[in-house]
Length: 240
Image (tube, rainbow, N blue to C red; front, side, top):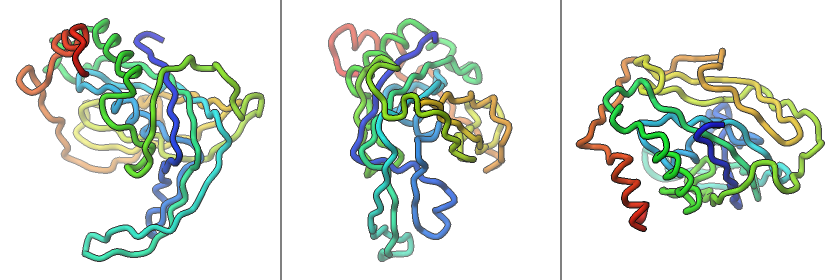
């Protein structure tokens, strides 16, 4: 895939919350990361408003195990309460993703240098990301390193198909769709021999509007560091 990178994510815990379980104050993780959760990981590795990050597929390397914990979350009205959160435990995933230019951002046309973005993206993977990596929620720290997708023994190799049911694919924002609204996308993934191949956001047919009258933030050369400046820092041995 053009402009693609491959990396591995590991962590002691992950919480990719099923939104249906939030209604009663509890949290139950999906069995696998959602597209949106992985997109968040990719954007923590390297993000520019010039780019749209597309997650292509994930390979689940370890068995799906869950662990429940009693939590005392802080309430907005003051004080705290008791809740039960069910996490994924000891996770390891291989991911392949790529970027495309955001054509809904004509204000950033000057920043569309494909080769430099790709080189910086790969360098950021090697460095473990530009920002902290979280596996669904802030208390679940993740770690990223380069890999070759498909290498190594995975627990679900030759396991067959696992239907994961209807789940959230992700959230569509105005700056990526050109529509002044926020939308939630749903889909029904199937894990085949440990691998989930994601459909693109624009291929989702189950879409629900979540908010109206949303406008994308304007970016230009005054409030976005250009790819040329970032690339010069990288070539000079500076921190990304």
